[in-house]
Image (cartoon, rainbow, N blue to C red; front, side, top):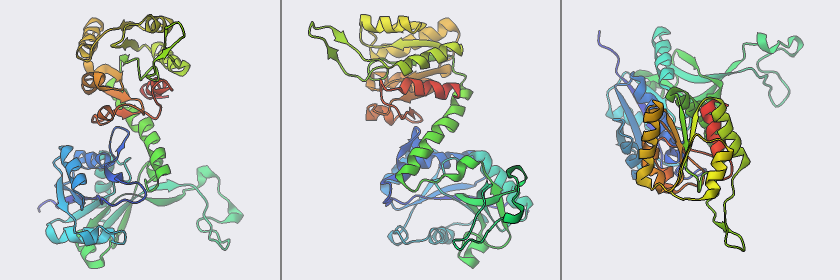
Length: 384
């Protein structure tokens, strides 16, 4: 008996009103849609991963990810505010042969490859016709007229004894083709539920959701990347990273720089964790030397052009016996570009130049240069 043909469909409409350009807007270092697309591709359970879009900009970004995703044009009438997702699913069903379609929603970037794998196993073993992803909530719910929905107030259970209820998190839905075509709905027949971690309960619909999700992605997802990278060396640019990039002068013509004590504490935390630290800058000032000495930074290199920075990092790695992928680097401008694209973990302050923010998989921090960006990056690396 031949294996069922499984496809994943990721609808990416171009006309988001609440957050313009939402589906391809960078979040925690990559376009929003990249998180779910990479998970779907890496799961290995889909014969084809498809993006349905009405936007040439979205199509271009998806193709630039080089994931082998198929982009299908979406008719204008299926890209309106009132068009249903089911209508998009049915349009794809008319064009492609498959047995099971998994609808994947890019607004839930916490989905991982293993979630698709485990959910499909549950789908098959449970002989399901459709399946939804959900999170368990141990909350008590009521109707507006004061009627309990999921518990008996006279026998209020302890939290540890309460099984809770499942809430759809919107990450994905699996549907047999015949169920979709018959019911015109993503859910029908024997419905299964796949439980995902509670962090995946947050979907991105409004601007405030975006901020919450980005912080969670940085903390949970990027933190795992940092741990897997086994960071041994932390390298920071100075101007625009440890400082606010301002140039200050006294009446006597002395040059001044403003550093942040929180960043200093971040360097201390890294040092206490056994991670070597280095400052590499194109400037040559006594101020930076004094700051590096005070923070007990292991390596200081000044007067290095952008072409020399990566060479310096390589020299340190050879001296310490580190690999380049064990290096974390934070920079803010074009003179850091080469280094940021070659190290194991790269980050930039929130006010870094656009060319730096667009580096694939760079961690875009929430703090600006000189305002705690180094401390934020240090805490991500250390899992704090």
